[in-house]
Image (cartoon, rainbow, N blue to C red; front, side, top):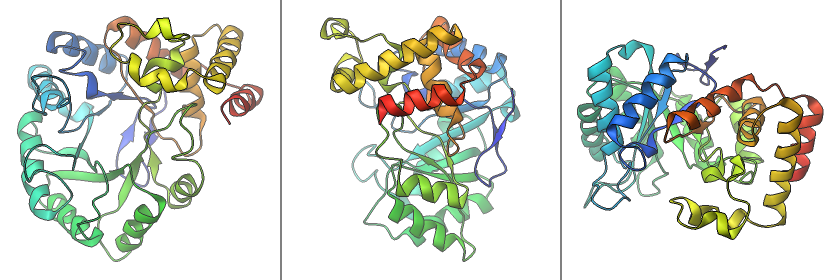
Length: 314
């Protein structure tokens, strides 16, 4: 398995990133440790999380995912063998939101404590902040890099215009966003494709899209309303149960049968083959799901497969 360079950064990552949003939510600490052990044991190294994970779950305050990852790092060692990506900027409480220098300085220290590490490999702006000048945010990142607390920086949920503005400012000696984290999958193409993807390709910004399997829809798990009953993620996938979404599933079934693979593996292989994509982000809540996910790197789609999926998902 060949690692890929993340944008123009110093980071080399395996072609699938693990999404840590499940840690402390649908995967408890014991299962999270097993998943992380298996993920790294299989030769993968890129773990993505955020300070806000999983604040949405009843009884959680945010920071649960980072805390579990930190406990795992402290237990297992090998910090230099993994690339840890986290994010800040979504609301963590009163006055704990946005990309201001003041809040960044506070947020990074909290993440470092929870992660039990001296540095973050990829620190990302979770969402654009129109109330903070882009230059001020990049200057604050510069200080963190100088202090050795952050290696590289990335953007998440940015428009082409705002990412372009940040990249232009980086030409003046400020840190450069090396990655973009948008929503991106076979059933969510509009956000990235077009001006934003063109910019990423032109500027060598690595795309690490989230919801790569559309909350499980692209595994073929949800094919009717009845399939969603009682499922944690069921309500999120209802919008895909239409002619287009089911057409994508039919194409995935066809190509999976051809390759002796699973529909979700084909969906991931399509993402991995995209020129703009460095490492799609996906999650698993048990070892069987993880093993199936990681085998996606072994599915080699040909031009006809990609054309079939492009047409079904257009």
